[in-house]
Image 1 (tube, rainbow over the protein chains, first blue to last red):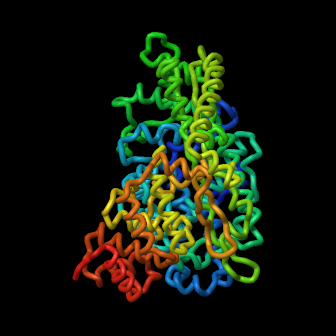
Image 2: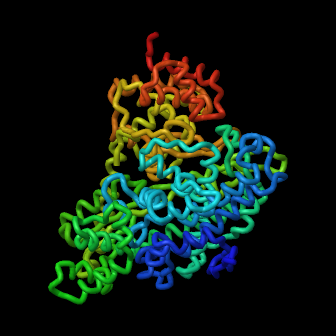
Length: 456
Length: 175
């Protein structure tokens, strides 16, 4: 008789238990490919321990997704009557067991379509309209995964898995397939992809901080999950995932963890410049300068192939990509000469673009690179159930959540041979640019407006 | 930086406040969506149908951008849900850099009058009904109401029909 219960050790969860269907999916080629894709691209150039892969993260998301589902829907007593009334069909035992399975599988498969080095090169190296989420959906619908799901008894509909695994926000924003999820499917989608309580986020923060060796990403996932509750959100009268007020501090800790992980790890300046160099190398070395958007062809591309190609180019001075490969593998990356800070932007909103333009004129486009992200803050406005059973916005309940600053980076880099000179030059230019902006304000009244408002 | 977009958002915030609106992010989103559907002026934001009706990720990104250089500020108030948007010290900079034409100002004033102090649930209904008419090509009120209910099961068809009736007035639909 075949085993009905399997287990694997995991750095975050201890043991992860899984069933025969999940095992078949884990052993499939699309899942095994994730063993060869770094979770954090070349962050290991900065944090040497950050060499973990998408595979173990996917197992972790499956585990968290199942736990969140159980917390929300496994006990009738925990489910408010108004919520139960809306999802009575889904709460029938066989139906609930089906959806629990779909959610765990969605968590397991949600990253299948990642390109080599995860997010590092996604936007520029796929044709318009394609991203890893869409490729994931293609693999779930058309690869051996779909056969495995359909051959299960009772069968699992691949489209149900796609609906819960494809981040609804990104699907609406980028896919344009016009699909609007039902309130029930939206909640299931949130269990995996949600901004605050999604299993994806909970797992990657904990896992990335552990492997990078930084303390910023740690928080108490057990307290957070035990505080989750399904409710009807008064803002839109739809079922949603909310939090019991007693667990608000664990949500604050998660959001702060995310903020610090972004500023200290994900957007570390050297990590970002490695992303730029990686993109340049891939653009130059891939046929047509892009990855294929056919999932069958993509299966042949992992970090291993890219690194092998880069090592060969690095060792061969005659290779057309020799110099690009050196920036990646011989620590010849460009150096940071300016990092945007909030006071500079408030003094001159266009300072980054202005400085990049001037730096390019001064040193030449070949020796200057720039990068920017945001400003972006998450939608941290979620419903909180108070001790007297009223529902409030998290922004009212928590001053910490209401005042989390947006994440924004703006970076200018220079070739290592000119970095010292360029750093000195950039410092002088920034002073001049801010001075001219301040003078302009005095001339046209912006400064007076600031003073009147007691502003920044 | 696209100051024209910022100036337009600031004009909407000013106009909504003048009519007693709560002026949260949803109010600004739905007002711009209605302005977009009306088609009198070019509204430089893309909208998609999302969880609570038409939504623009562009608008959200620009709000973040504006907040980062204090063209707007956000405030959590004692009553109500979510944050209130208000002009920040650098709003005047955005106004000047992205100056609006008289036509644009007039169109924005008109949509703000229509939106007035409506709450987010009403705005969700109205903006979605408008979307269905404008972008899904439905013109029969029953069909619009049915589609609205299908998208938002918590909105009864009768309420959807009322919303569609009101939106016909806004879009200038003649029987």
